[in-house]
Length: 410
Image 1 (tube, rainbow, N blue to C red):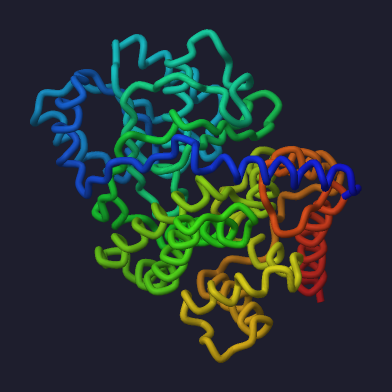
Image 2 (image 1 turned 180 degrees about the vertical axis):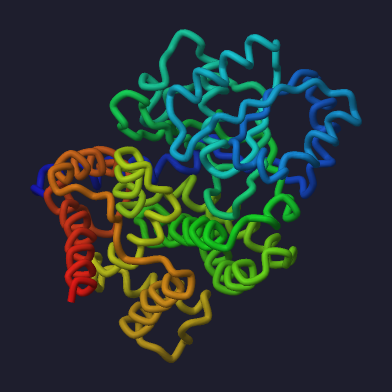
């Protein structure tokens, strides 16, 4: 990256960090069961609800407890179940039409990050009916109060139930972009472990590593606060202590509850301290090829950490201690190596590879351009990179693909 652009990025990040204490961050009200939702709706005087979810949630019956609860309290609702992984502008428009058709005044996002992000985007369009989502991309462009927004995560990973971000994919161009503003933070987060109990092991793993990525990128960035550091360390500790239990036994409600708390804390951390190049590259892959976000993050995380070199050794040392993979006697360099290796080992246990097979070489300049545009100057990463430097991550994954194919042929 050229020196002038680097200076601009660091100046932008410094100004944003200085403004953190004065910005209207807030944490959602937490309840631990869907049975508490009617009381929330009554308190907020909301009597028609739009539930935004996906077909998988419906097919597996995860939404039944919520439906039964609303039915018992005679609360009318309509369900939009068309949300796809990496939700699109089409999803938002379809759900928005239902919201108006049924005179709704509250929105429940029920599912993974895709459903909750879609719910946030619908709320933004309700608040600003004459403005497209594309006009809201970036930071602080929503401004207006959303309808009551309740988030019910069925995965312990995205942290979307506590963040000010919604990530949407343009249905025509496949460009994936974030919308960041304080009104997008849900008013209520329902951390109900029973909702996550039937999550398959593979999704438990990738969404859990998504939360790990949130915590790690928030902690190693240059815009941390005492609060975000504490949230990130707690999240890392909880994930390392519970993800294997949740992966091996989905009915372990203690592990499920702890993973939900970890994802929530990681979301709180990166809401203020932001993420980094893992997310920027992962978002480009999700937009272009519909690669699930948690999977892309899991694949990329150790490679991006290694690319930062010794600049993050001190911070990885602290994360390694929190994770229980190193102790105070280890040098910073040793602990950093141990932490990255622990992530690689975690990937192996969960059968997560090191490749993204969908990547096409001719797409790499465009993907890197989108990643660089998302990340710079907003993300306070430890080491700044431009689009040309970011291309190396895509080629790294392609080189691994080619090596694996050659080995299989032999």
